[in-house]
Image (cartoon, rainbow, N blue to C red; front, top):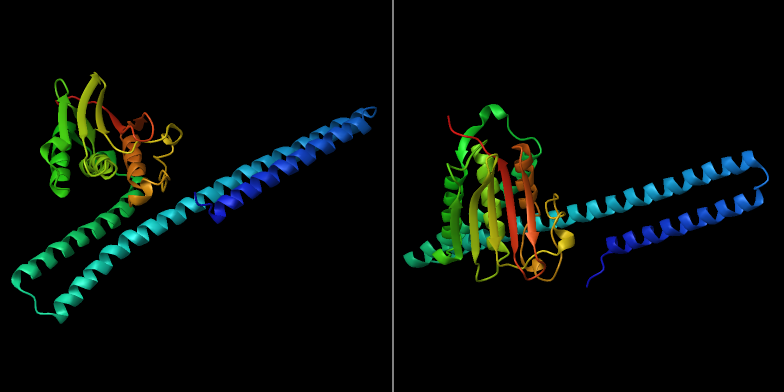
Length: 301
């Protein structure tokens, strides 16, 4: 396992903080022993050393958090740089080939197809970054509409199937919503949340995905979208962290899957803005994952 410079820095500052706290406690105990007959000095010394210990602990905590945040931002910048540079390099290479060589019509069409795919990939990365910024602000509820989440999910599922050339059995859809699965919200934002969950499931399911998508109404007040995959799974300790901005689970499997660490952050932001929540469940690494989007249910007039 690679040990980065920031990991070493985190270890150093944690060790330094522990040593300083230990030193402060030693001085505090010594002060108490030497001043136990002088009540005023004893009380002042205890208060003074308590403040020192508290300050060092808080300083160490904030310092470690800042180091981790900077490390996540660096990982995000590296991922975005790769996601932008790769398709641009590919498009440039194909354009140079078209400019310098005489190709038959079949080869030209194949080049155009690949360049369009690279352009779509490039646009997708840009849109993810832009939507992450928008997710922090959102749209006015005045622009919200009543939306059939089942119909929207089915559309997104068909689009994902076409985009990744998946067979019908790779993406299964079940709707058990009685009297409709209608929610109130912004159509584009909710479509983004649904698409991100589906893309995430396909991306981390390996070469033979088996994904089950369900829309449920477990009670009268909520609509639930569940996306269950047979992918790499998530360690239990990471389940709450994966929805943070820029955060990605780090292991040998996820390093092979490119991403910006923004998709699930966008999903959670949209869910919270619509009065709902987003969560994840997994039995652990290699046991697949289930992502859940819960939204308030409304009834058509």
